[in-house]
Image (cartoon, rainbow, N blue to C red; front, side, top):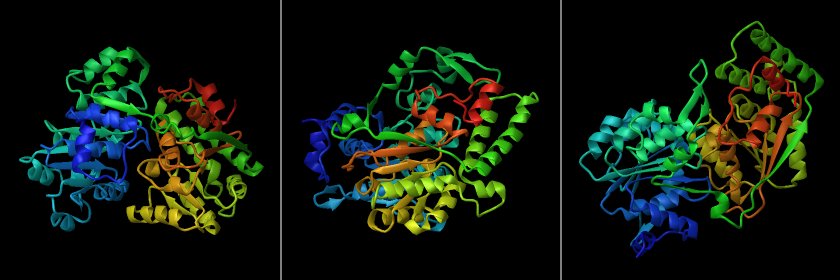
Length: 465
């Protein structure tokens, strides 16, 4: 009997897995350290749960994740039954005093990356003499091997079963080392050997400008792991339709943008070095001017053209709901206030975990709530349920890397979506957004951070084609 069928003999799940998911479960279940590199909406959570339940010698599982996923994981695990009883879970959260009172004997202990680091000694002392495994959801959090998060996961999972879950493990080839180190130890002796094999050229700042032996790296990434795209998992689900909407800023707004851009560019013209950090920071800062006109002009009454665009899209889709994706906290806060008449709600960095969940629930359940604002870095993973009530998205600010862009689109393009997802991309002409969105939509796996010298940078911030 296959691993999948063995688990199904013992446990009752709310639904059957699809054939592609079953094949992955059957392939990975016999391996103690694995990577589920499946795109958002393809069932990473359910596949990992099957493997956890198949490994009968492992009595407990520690699942580490971003805080916004805790409630979703808890609800999912409790939907799985053994002899009519739900799986036991403990959501490890709250104040230090509250955490001390929590039951740590549940089959699944759910916690954030922050609390894993903060309470590491207590958790390690509790688990060290037990047979336990570790699941890391949104494993991009551990891709920096020098970070405290990676070190904590590495220590707590040492000589234990480990599952890494993420739909987008890497933005650049160098990210791969962290995953391979954990699930295929011994493939590289250390980071130095990895760099000797795969780094061909670096600039004066130590930034890799050319990689090599990428076929070897791709093969090593496949060790003990499987990938699954949304289109593979859901052949019946069409790929989203992407429609760029180019619009013009108010002339006074564009004049302000160009003045601020010129003030910053003159620094480079006077001989300042253009490195990845300074060029990226300039693009990021200037994109904030595109929507937050009033904040940069010291006049709160200034109305950016993007508000007219949002209202036009809402009129176009009739009574349907709309997801608006914006990269910056300031933008989300501004749009939340500006779109009150549509009963807008928001999920972004400064919104508490409880209020994020309330916003999601209201958008799903309240027919009068037509708009939800999502910051890709805060809501681009784990948010589920929007696909049942919405299939339209408007992206008004470009994330700085492809991963959050893909993740936020996957809030709608996922299992449960019955309509063709339409992603509109608002691009302010004559601004940095022209180049940033083009890079995202036409992106390959090796994302650029610097586009040449001063002239190219000037073209980028002025939106020149």
